[in-house]
Amino acid sequence: ASREPRPRAGNYESAEEDAECITSVRAFLSGTGGQSSSRAIGRHLAKEGLLAPLKQRHAGLYHFLHRHSDDFCMQMPTQPGEVEYGVRLREPSAARAREAAE
Image 1: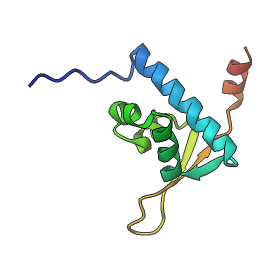
Image 2 (image 1 turned 60 degrees about the vertical axis):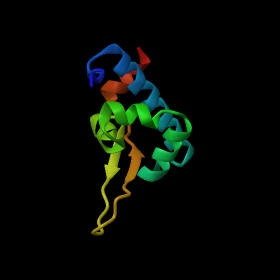
Image 3 (image 1 turned 90 degrees about the vertical axis):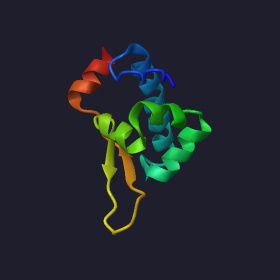
Image 4 (image 1 turned 30 degrees about the vertical axis):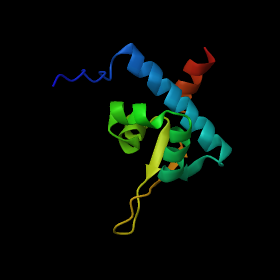
């Protein structure tokens, strides 16, 4: 049983797909006051057809958000057994704001 190789994180296609997911999550969070739950974000990405490819590249939403921690901040659950966590937009750093303006 041959398996197709998974895309490597450093390849262009993966970076382009991540950019699409980042844009989608940022837009969703902007529409919800800058924060939401991991469950709501997952549902949004699924509706947009982006969740399955994201899971193939990152093994899940948590790993995607962790990899893009310059854009998103996670607030992990405090109660035992909770699996849903909070996600909010991270304020852009001054350096990133300058890069975006150029």
